[in-house]
Amino acid sequence: MSTSQHPVALRLERLVGGDAKLLALVMMLPLIDGVFPALILAGALDDPLSAVQVGLLIFGGSATVAVILAEMSGTPREQATVVLLVGIPLILLAGVQAALAPAIGSVLDDAIITRFAALVILAIAAKTASATIGEYLPSPGVIIGLGLVASIDLNGVAFVVLDDLTLVANAVLAAGIGVAFALAIALGGPYLRQYMDLDRFRFGSAVALGLLPLSLLGMAFGQAPLAALVVAGLFALDIPLEWRTADGELEAEEADPEEDAIGVRELGTLTDGGNETEPVFGGWVASRPEEDEPAQDDVAPDDSSEGDGRAPWL
Image (cartoon, rainbow, N blue to C red; front, side):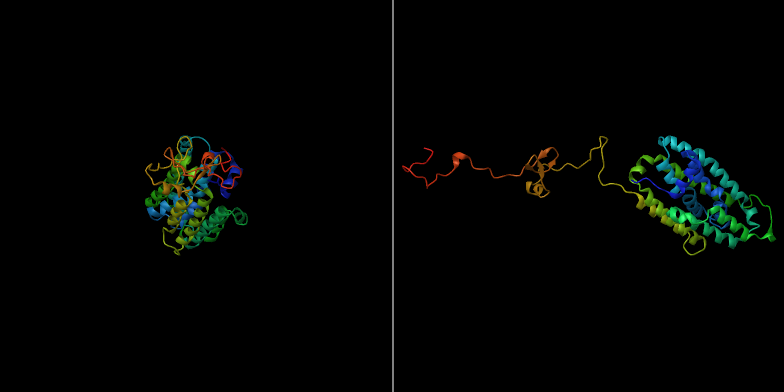
């Protein structure tokens, strides 16, 4: 499988360096740049299924997969330990932001912040799909900052914490799903590195992210992004039809030695040292019968020989 050249992961790697720091920054970036609070205020975590969707797309996603499979080193257990060290604080911070979300939302216009949340997700999807496009787009933090300025409404200011426990639970669920996804990728890394095309999954994840704003604005059904992500994961897998043994040899089914020789010959022949033989099946070789050249003793007498009428060799 090809190694991923994920634009976001590569840019962050140049900033922080180190696989553990890179994973922490990639997974916590939605909390840092305000994307996750914006999704909370936009109503993207109103039910558990939506929380699962946000967790897979925002905290999991292609950037997390690219960092774990293409950048991190160590055994699966060591990588899983790093994921847990990053994931536990992530879950706690997600719960804190959800608890403070009602107080933040009291000074914002819900309709405007929803549009800006959709816009920032579209920008992230474009950056995920292409590094060239991402160079011309503002960062998510800038878009969220503009959205906060545009949506400020001081008429209903109220400092409320833990106003909606269900919202906090859904936020914790979303972060937990993202951590569980990253943990599964770390544990299955040895197999996914062989059978998963990271760049193909990246493009599929970008499509799923592009559907999330449409879902927020009511232009697509609620779980369309989740369905697109599942399809992207299936198409990213490239499992071969031939399996290799521990010695690196291909496993093949043994053919029946009683198979008809004519049917065997139809499969083709192998050339070995100029002698044409049939393929080897189960330790036996079906040889192609050939016409033996006549021996010198069996050559017919030459009637055109001259002399006393006897054969020339007599």
